Image (cartoon, rainbow, N blue to C red; front, side, top):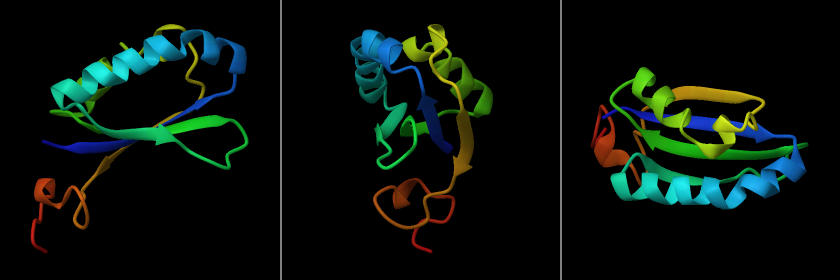
Length: 101
């Protein structure tokens, strides 16, 4: 299944704090389904930012999943990048298009 690197920025600190627990619950649910593989804040950025490593059948399915994030629902994702990722080396190598490369 394709993997994607997703980054979010959240410049509205007050709203971010208000919806953080709902976002964490959403991420925990995605961990259970295997859609979320890893996630965490990006340190040293000018605004609050995070990176998510996600699995999805395709980009459209991924975008449908992201649309259910409470931060997305509340309009708290200002900048988002979505890039399909092929993890040739490291912890996710078994899911690469070229395992054992």
